[in-house]
Each structure stands twice: as structure tokens, then as C-alpha cells.
Image (cartoon, rainbow, N blue to C red; front, side):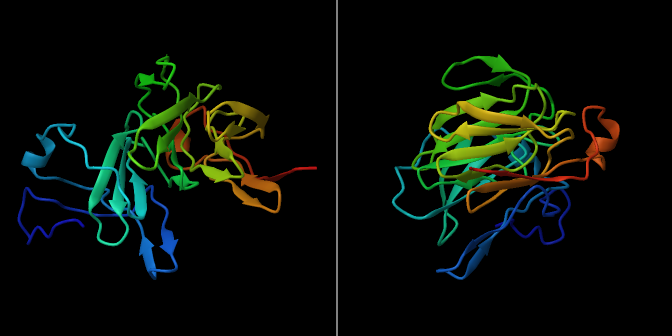
Length: 239
């Protein structure tokens, strides 16, 4: 969906894939992935208003949702790419914002907010303010924020989220590597565990078990003392 710049300077340039995970629609035989880690954008786009003045009517179509490092979630018609709704889920930053992929249980869309710039992040519905990262749930029909939960360890929440059986799983980059299980409906933290090293990847869920690895000491982690190395894979299972 990035327009051709026809080789002109001062237009869009670059559409690398970074911070996006593909989604597969078997029925449509489509693979969806967000691009646009832009090197430049036209001045008239950079100068445009930050928020729309109008909202699209409630959709009745199937959606695909992408969340940018800007913190904005975009819901598109899965058949033609038309914009259905957009929501600022949380503050953006050089490293996010939303990164590495969102999750859905059809009723709600969930994303991490890394908050790499440590900006003020107003939580919903409490209106409390944090500078930590966190996790956000949006109504899939219209993008309305239903809840947002801050990382209790005051770390950034850079890894993708996973939802299964009414529980949302997210991890923190904090050096002790906490993983959190949240009530998908309310955002309440139900359980947590310190893995001992930064959590940057997402969790997998299968047959009553959660699987997740820890450790991140490359690229961004090299210059951040909160990021710690690790080499373990954890499995947490329901007894």
C-alpha cells in the first residue's frame, strides 16, 4: 500500500519489514504483513494533522490489524485494505510503540506498548500515568481502548503478546525477565514469574502449556543495562 515515488526525491522512500509478524488467512489464501520502516516521508504527510476528524462506521467485515512503532493501531478490511478504524494505543518511540505483532480473540485486539522513549503513558480506564511499557486491549469493532496495564517492573514491554483461553501473556525487558498472565477481559494480572533474564520474544501456547525463552543482549540490548542475557526455554503448564 506504499505509493510509488517514481524515483522522485522528497517522497516516500523505504518500506523495510521491521517489528511486524505475518498473519495468514487460509480461506483467502492471503498473507498479511506490515511494512514501512520508512527512510523518508513527504513533507505534506509529516505536517498533517495527527488525528482524524471523523470515524468510520462500525465494520461488518473481517479485519487485519497492524500496530506501528508510533503506537497507532490500524484496522483494515481484510479483502481490500480499506481503513476501518485507527486508535492511538499508547506512546510511540524509536523502538516502539507496538512491535513484533498483535493478537486477537475476535472480540478484542491486544498489543504491547514498549514505550521505549519513556513518555507519559495514560492507562485506561484508571487514567493513571506511567513511563513504563505495558499492554493494551481494544474493541475489535471500533478500536476503543478497553483497558491498559503497565509493566509492574517499570520495564519496557517490547515483545509480542499471546492470547489463549481468556488469558493474555506478555513479557518485560526488565533484567529479571518477568512474564505476566493477565485477564484478557480486564487486564488484571493473574500470575507472574521472574525468568532471570530479559523477555523480548513472544510466548507459544499448546495443550495447556506456555513456552517462552529469555535473554536479549544484542542491538538495543547492548547499550541498555536493563537488558540481560539468557539461554533458557521455560514451560509453564496447568496441573
